Image (cartoon, rainbow, N blue to C red; front, side, top):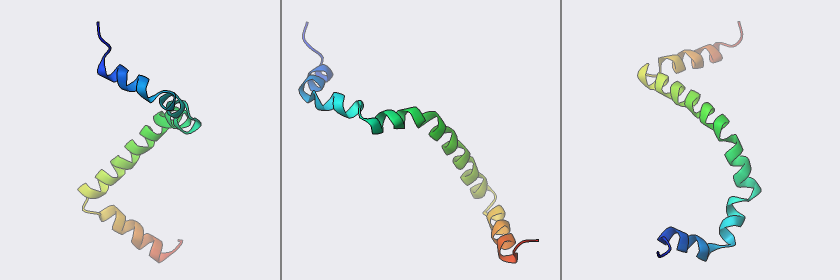
Length: 70
């Protein structure tokens, strides 16, 4: 049975492939993915809320900041 095309590509890219996926940046990024995913969901909800409210809550926040502390 012949080797799969993807296996051929991976074998041809060694050791660069293993160096890249084992790099500290990649492993730390992968370790933070659950946190990044959670933060992005909160951000997406906030942006969606702003878009569906016509930006009204943003206008209220800006106005409150311009008025200064109570």
